[in-house]
Each structure stands twice: as structure tokens, then as C-alpha cells.
Image 1 (tube, helix red, strand yellow):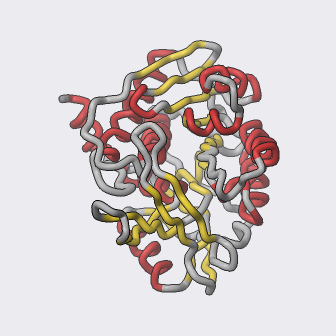
Image 2 (cartoon, helix red, strand yellow):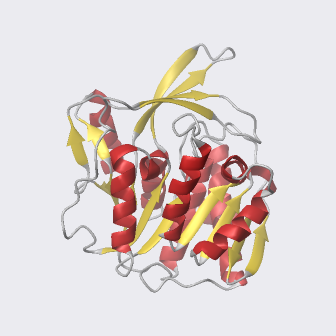
Length: 314
């Protein structure tokens, strides 16, 4: 496997997930899209470092212990005395996925990345995405980091749009497009692109975004599989059949596994190039299988590389 650490920038949130038939009771789970990606990449055996902010409260201690248990390095994680941010998860359909309501203000989320001058040392790739890539002080710091990383690392981006946090569509679109221009590859869901570009088919929007700078753009479509565009060529993979327990974290598992597949092939780094269709199909098939395994479980619980490889052999 290629040497070089994957850096993951973004939020860590306590997900309050409904339980039972009525959903009146909630279970507190550790979440946040970038945190899920960091765990997913680490479980693939890739050295991973989390660039985010954790509270010093009891939930922050839970985050620290869980990340350390999965082998995620916290050397560049900022600590904050304010409480951990929250996300109330609301059940959705298999097509729409879960919905979220966020509590971020006056929490440990609210601040920059606090990175040292040598933050890229030993790294090969930076992943950024979700709320913290565009919202507040973290959003501004993340864009600065993405731009600074060019020439030293490859950069991946997943907008993971949250309209309840960024309801101004025009402002969110402008912010997201700025980050897409700073990325080597983009992963977005059909729901992301439907919200950002209403009235236009997601695959058409993906094709337009592929002209903005990324060498690889991937669209996830839930049960309809995934579409990738690289070097002007389109590649599609089907979604594996699975009994869905819930869809929380499926997109994050896809992104983590896609990144890990690239890492294994030595494709990450400042010389990132568009893959050929056969290579891209292999990467997306691996990622789709990881997402399917996550859908078969409760909560954001990404698989290991061994689990995905075993599932691909069946």
C-alpha cells in the first residue's frame, strides 16, 4: 500500500438517533460526516489524521477514545471547553436518506482549524466536506487549507449539503463551487445536486461541475448505484442488493472506501490524475460495496477493508 497519511477536516457531532416504532426515544451516537470518513479510511488500514475540533466534555472524551480505538491520529485536533455540537437525526426514506437538525452555536464546533505551519508533513491527501467546509470559521479555514494543500497533497471534497444549516441556496452554491474548484476529486449525492441546481438532472450537474477543475467527479444515487466522470468518460456501477437497516453514514462510507481504494493504488498525491474507466469502475465498486455494508447496519458503522473484500468475493 502507498505510504502517506490521509488528513480529514471537518466536524464531529453527537447524533441523536430515533429508536423504537414511534421514534420518541433517542440514542446518542458519535457522528459527523468528516468524522465518519476519518473512521472509515482508518478501518481500511490507511494512516489517518483528523483535523477538527473536539469538546473537553464527556462526549468529547468519547470521540477521542473512539477515534484512537480505530487508529485515527489526533495530533492536529483542537480541543475546546465548550460542549459538543448536536445533530438530531430524523428518519427518511431509502431514496432521501436521513434528515438532520443541528445545534452548533456556542459549541466546540465554533472555531477555526488551528493548524501549524507544517500541517501537511507526512501526508498525501486532504479530504474536506459537509458543514465545516463552508460554514463559519471552520468553513473559511477549510477553504484556506484546501487551497494551501494544492501542490503538496491531493484534495477530495464532498459537499454533503445540509440546507437546515445553510438555507441560502445561492450563498451555499457559491461557497461549494469555490471548494470544488480547489479539489482534485468530487463526490456528491444526487440529493446534493438536486438541491444545489433545482430543475436540472443530477448527472447533468455533475458533468458541468467536472468542467470546473476536478479530475474526477462521482455521483452517488442511493439504490441506483454511482456514476463517475473522469477524462470525459462516464462510468457507472450498480448498487449491491442489501437489506437496509438505515442509511446513516452510507455516503461517508462510500467516500472513505473510494479514498482508500485510490490510496491503495498509489493514485493520491499532488500528481493526482484522471483514472481510466476500468480503474474507476473498480474503485467505485469497492466504495459501493462499503456503502451497502454500512446500510445493513444501524448507525454510521463503516466496514473494514477485509469485510469489503470478503463481500466482493461472494
